[in-house]
Length: 473
Ligand SMILES: Nc1ncnc2c1ncn2[C@@H]1O[C@H](COP(=O)(O)OP(=O)(O)O)[C@@H](O)[C@H]1O
Ligand SMILES: [Mg+2]
Image (cartoon, rainbow, N blue to C red; front, top):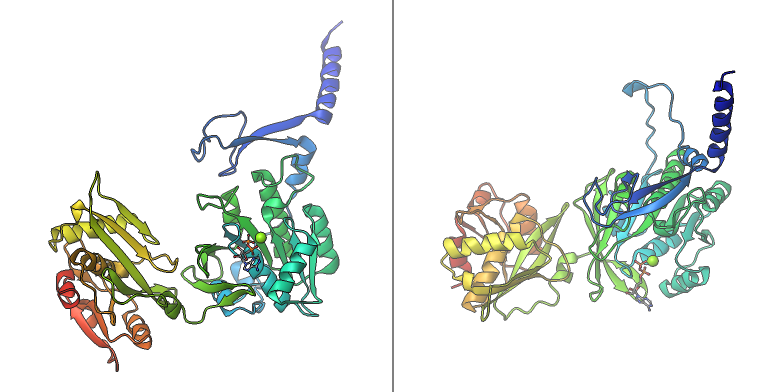
C-alpha cells in the first residue's frame, strides 16, 4: 500500500489548519516604510538605524488591505480622456489660497505639516468654519482633541457655523461611513497619525496604519472629487513623523514654519501637483486666530534698528512675490579655539563660501573671527541673490560701520568676487522703492535695459568689492 494518499491528506489538513491561523509578521521601517522579513538594526532600504518595528498582519487582512479600487480596465488614448475642469474652491484666506496654487482642487489630498502648536488646527478650523455653507458642508474629524475643545477654540477664534460638522473619531471605517452618509464638500482629518483601521493590528501612527488610512482617504477623494486635508506631525528633526511614503502619496504638502516665540507663521508648499512650490503664505498668530499678512516686507522690517553695524536689507523672491528681509551679521574675534559659523534662516555652507570670498578677494580677515548670521523674522533665505547683502552685513560688522539704512543690496557673488546678475530685478527694485528705499546696488549685468525708477537711485557694480565701496566706507 502506498503512503502517498495518507501523507497528502495529512498535508492538506495541515494546510487547511495553517490557512486559518497563519499570522504574518514583518518588520516595517518607520522612516521609509520598507518591509523586511526579520529584524535588523539598520533599515536595508533607507539606512536609518533602529527604525524597524514588528507589525502583524493576518493573511485574510493582507488581502483586505490590498483591496484598492480597480481602475479602468482598458487603457484609453490621451485625447479621449474627458478631463472636465472642476472649478477650484476658494478658501477665505488669500494667503492660504496662494500657497495652494490658487484655491483647493476638487478631489485633491493635501497634507499640512508642522511643529506642535504652530497653528495647523487653528488654520484649518477657521477656514472650515468660514467656508462651510448650506451647499458646502464640511466635516472636521479630530482624533486629538474632544469636540468640546474644538468648540472652545472656535469660540476663541470667533467663528461659528451650522454647516461645519465635528466628529471625534479615530477609526477610519467609521469616518468613511459618515462621509458616505453626509457627503461633505470638504473633509479635514486632524491628524492622520491618530487614525487607524481595524484591519491592521499595528498601533495608530505606525507606517502601515498611516499608509492604509491615507490610501483609503485618497481613494475617497479621487472617486468622489471631495478634497481632503490631512494634518501631519513633524518630528524634532523637522521631518514628517512616520512614513516618507505619505509625502509621495499626497497631491500637495504644505509646511507651517516659524518660531513659536514669534507671531509670524509661514506656510510653504513643499510639494504641489497643482501649483508652484515657490509661493509662501505669511500669517500673523493672534488670540483671534491666524490673520493674513498683506505686506510681508513691512512686517519683516518692522523691528529694524537702523543705527547698528552688520545690518542690511535684501530682497528675496518668494514665488512671484518680492519680500524685503533684514540680514544681521555679527563678527567678533575668536578668543578661544576654532572660529564659529552660525546661521539662522540661511545655509551655513553658503556663509562659509562667502567668508572665503571676503577673505581672499576683499581682504577682510574673517578666518580668525566668529561669524553669526541671522535672517530676521523667522523667514528662510535660500537665494543666491542675497549674497551681496550677506557680504555687506559681515563687512559692516567687521569694520563696525553702519550701512546706509535706505540702501538695498541685490546680487549673487561668484567665487572670483564678481557680482552676477539675478532674475526678477525690476520687481525687486520696485518693492524696495515701494518700501521707501532710496538706493539699490545691483549687478552691472542687470543694469542694461532696466526701466527708469522715480524715487530710487540704481547703482550698478561689477564686483562685490566695488559694491562694498559704495556701501561701507
Ligand atoms: N488664547 C489662546 N489660547 C490658546 N492658544 C492660543 C491663544 N492665542 C494664541 N494661541 C496659539 O494657538 C496655538 C495653537 O495652535 P494649534 O492650531 O492648536 O496648533 P497645532 O494644531 O499645529 O498643534 C498656540 O501655540 C498659540 O500660539
Ligand atoms: Mg492640532
